[in-house]
Image (cartoon, rainbow, N blue to C red; front, side, top):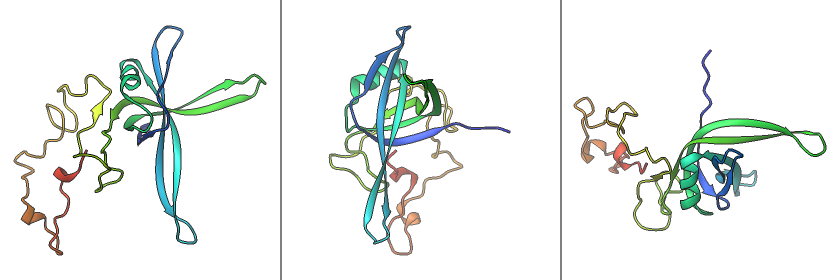
Length: 179
C-alpha cells in the first residue's frame, strides 16, 4: 500500500526565526507558525481557534528564512510531518511533532487572509520563495517549463461573458486566484 506524508501550512510567524547550527555546522532554522480557524460557539458567537506549528527548515532555505522573515510575516510551507523522541532530565520519554519544510514561500504583507479578500496594503504581489531554484524551469504541474499550462488549445480562455452567473456577476476563474 502506498503512503503519503505531506503537509501544507499557510499562516503567520509568532516570533522571529530561531537560528541554530548542528554539530556539523549545518544551518537549521525553527519557525513557529500560527494558523487560525473561525467557528461559531453554541451561543452563536464567532470564536477564533489558533493552532501553532513548529516548522524546521534546513540549509540555504534556512538561511533565507532567517534573513528575510520576522514576527508577523505570512508564509506558505510545504513539508512532511516528523515525530522525534528523547529522554528528559528525569528519564521520562518526551515526544515532539514538527513539520520539516521542503519549500517555504514568503507571502507579501498584503496577502489575502482568506479566499476572495485582501489584507491591508497595496495590490497583491506574487509570493517570494525561500528556495533559490524555485524560479528555474524544469516542469511542474504538467507544463514543460513549469507552472500551469491553461492557455493551450485544449484549454481555451473564456471571456467574462461566458463566466457570468445567473445573477449577472462574474464567477472566479483561474486567473482570479491570487496564488
